[in-house]
Image (cartoon, rainbow, N blue to C red; front, side, top):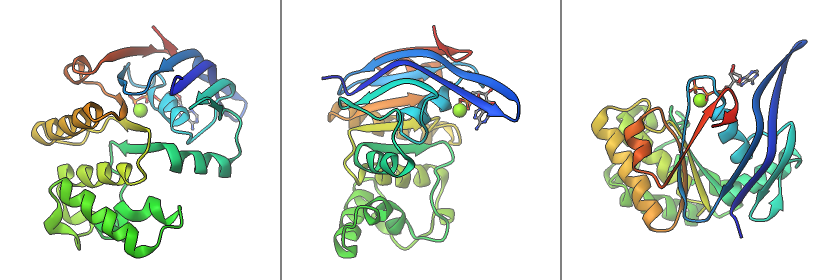
Amino acid sequence: MNLVELKNISKIYKTGAVKFIALEQINLTINKGEYLAILGPSGSGKSTLMHILGCLSTPTSGDYLLNGKNVASLSVNQLAKVRNQNIGFVFQNFNLLANLNIVDNVALPLVYRGIAKEERTKKAKELLTHFGLGGHFSHHANELSGGQQQRVAIARSLITEPDIILADEPTGNLDSKSGDDVIHMLEKLNRDGKTIIIVTHDEKIAERTKQIIRIVDGKIM
Ligand SMILES: Nc1ncnc2c1ncn2[C@@H]1O[C@H](COP(=O)(O)OP(=O)(O)OP(=O)(O)O)[C@@H](O)[C@H]1O
Ligand SMILES: [Mg+2]
């Protein structure tokens, strides 16, 4: 079975009386174990597509089958549940909570699952240690470098053991060394079987993936 199947997906943003077609008739199939790069100019619809893939928003029309289940018209609460069970996110700006230490940041998705504190803290510490942050448990996000923050974000994305990792410009705010480290981590996760979808402006990063799609004006070329 395909992990992801998008059928004739369109997304239209309405701002007052103005309509903007951000995605137009997107068809895309993604198999388990894929490592897919999404390339395209600024404003072409990449993040809009990632938001739909990640169940952060729903399409205006079309079907989205995730693990065979149509999630295109779920309610906000149902979408949140699907996200928590299936998807891990890594963002350009890390999206860590400044008022929590990094252990609590990584453990947060398990709070929504109702996992007891002791268990979620243990799991978060294991992941952080795995990513070389064992000496930083009590640090807050703003006390870490960008590369370290992105490693925390990757640990957080993994704690729910999702099928898919969505990474929207994960190296966009990093120096080249930290960016390379992040890409190597994603490649390792893919070798271990995770499905990875990455938005990037960097052709060199895209070339290392298994499949590239290009989006221009909301359409796949
Ligand atoms: N919430 C929104 N309301 C109205 N228009 C939006 C909204 N979000 C995005 N858009 C518009 O949809 C288009 C696609 O935006 P999107 O963020 O998907 O582009 P992108 O390819 O990710 O660009 P970038 O490379 O700059 O991140 C843009 O023209 C943008 O202005
Ligand atoms: Mg974007």
